[in-house]
Amino acid sequence: MKKILALLALLVAAVQISAHERQWAVVNVSSCFLRARPDYESGNETQCLMGTVLEVTGRDRYWLRVNAPDYRNCWTNELSLALMSEEQKDAYIAAPKLICVAEYTHVYTEPDERSARICDFIMGDIVRRSASGAFGFWTAVTLPSGREGWVRGEDVEDFGRWAEHRRPDGEDLTAFAMNFLGVPYMWGGNTVKHFDCSGLTKFVYMMNRIVLPRNAREQIYCGAEVPFDFDLMEPGDLVFFGSLGADGGYASVTHVAMYIGDGRIIHSSQLVRINSLREGLPDSYGRRPIAVRRILGHVDRGLGAVSVSEQPWYFGK
View 1 (tube, rainbow, N blue to C red):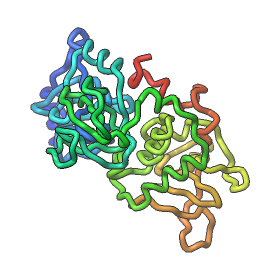
View 2: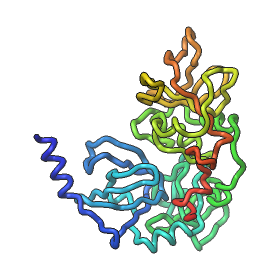
View 3: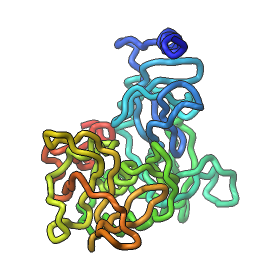
View 4: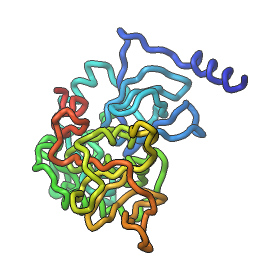
C-alpha cells in the first residue's frame, strides 16, 4: 500500500507539460545522472554528457523529468541543465560546436591555467564555438548556459569534421577501449569516470563515430549475428551473456563485452578489465555467450547502429 501511495503522490507532483508548451534542456555539466525517480537515493539509470539535448516532460520541485535521445522518463536536477524553448533548442543544434577529445580537462575563465575553473570537461562533452575565437594555444567556447570560457585547443576538435572522420576498424576500437582499463564499474555509468557494461561498449563506439542503443538488451539486436567461433570472430564484435528461452530466443540479456581477439574480451565487470572466453585459464570469464554481433560493416543499414553524423539530435537532420 505504501508503494502505491508513493507512486500516486509522484504522479500528482509531476507537472505535465502540454504539447504547446513543449520545453527542452541541454546538459550543462560534464555529465549528469538520470535517475528513475526525483530523489537522490533513487537508482541511476544512465548518464548524459554535456551538450546532450533533452526533452522536458514534467517537474517535481527542483527535479525535471526528461527524455534523453536513448532513454525516456528519467529525472535529473535542474541545476545540471540549461532550459531552452523549441526555437532556442533548434538554434543550439544548428550552431557550430566543438567536442572534447581529451580524457579529462577543464574549462577556465581566461586563456590561462592559473585562472579560475568554470567546470570540468571530459571526453565526449560538446560545447558551442565562441565568437571570441582563439588566443595562442587556447580556444574560446560557449557552454549550453551561454557562459563563455576557455579550453586548451588540443583538447577539442570541430564536431562536424570529427563526426565525418574515417570509419574505425577493430584495431581502432580495441586500442581505444584499452585506455579505460581499471575504470570502476557503476550501474548506469556512461562516461570516462565510470562505466557499466553497455555504457562502456556504447562509449567506445560513440567516440569512434558510431551510435549504439544504450542497453545490452537493445545492443544485442544491432549489426549482424556471428557464430561463437574464435576463427570467425573479429576485434570489435560485441559478445552478449544471459539466458536463452525454450524457443531459442533471448530470455534475458545480462551483460555485454567487446571482443579484442585471441579469445579475449574487454568489459566493465566490477571494473574495466580483460578476460578470456577460453575455458580452464586463470583469467577465464567462466560464462558462455548467448550471442555475438558484428557492428562494423553494418552501420547505417537499419540494423541499430548509426553514424554520429546521421543523428538528428546532433545535427538536426
